[in-house]
Image (tube, rainbow, N blue to C red; front, side):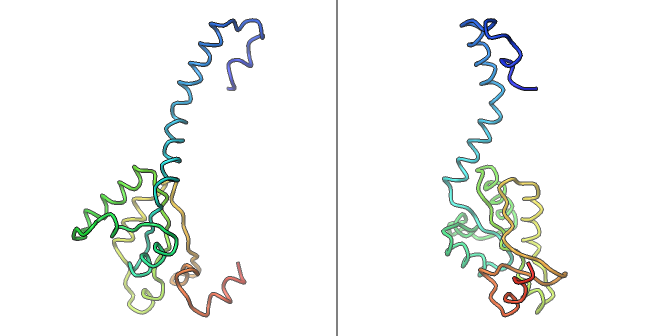
Length: 160
């Protein structure tokens, strides 16, 4: 649609007209201002890390200066309800969420998939500040080369 000023001849905009158009521009930009505020908040607040297996998650978060649910719990006992509340609060705050992915090695050993991690992924679906930081190939293979160290990465990363 463009800027309304572009459709008017230059002399049609007296002092009052410019003021009205500036006010209209400010109102139209209200949604953009809110989005800008969320982006600003996500830059000022530490990112959070999610993934399967808290040992992996905490180690990666420490290395990059991010937080985990353990930081948010501050000594409280973990529950599934608190986990969901944490994800929802991180989204409200506009936090950058870094997903280091499933623990493919543990899945291969145990055959178990984390229901908690699955919940987090469902809640974050479509969230604009979600970052997937892992690779997946075949059904049960993949990981994050910064977290999951094994010989296969040398061969796999050459393929990408």
